[in-house]
Length: 176
Image (cartoon, rainbow, N blue to C red; front, side):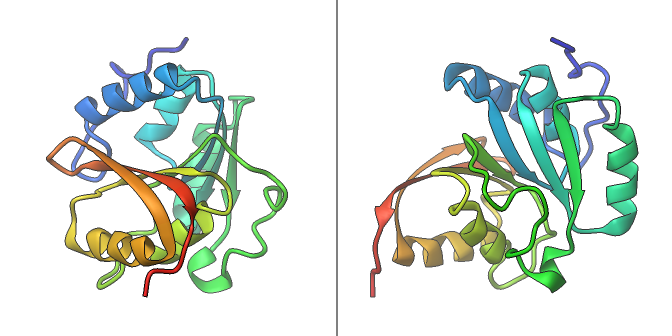
């Protein structure tokens, strides 16, 4: 174990130290081994600390280059560039036929009125458990309410500050 928690730079754009600890416990308790991550950063270090295999997708070319370089020496992390905001989700290289224990959604940046909706919809094609950072923001809440009309979800919440929402797919339904 690398124990990055004391070396990373927590700031207003990242998960918090409290969320890092929660995420680490979550990964251990649920024996998570594979993660699809939207938005590499501090959370990626947490996945490294817990020996997860991670495909981390970045939609901004500048940040992709930074994170690809940052994580290049770690064999269990693959940073993938895909501008899914423009190109869509159907052609993300190297993950078409993969599924994951969890998907962690922390990108793209929130966009009202339905933040991260397309990312969340895609996430449920890759895992039955999706964690969303900044869960408590209004635009993310709008997206989750819409998802509840499509999916039968169990929802847990961690941290009343920014919040991490744990969305678990029970089955597929249409609530009209």
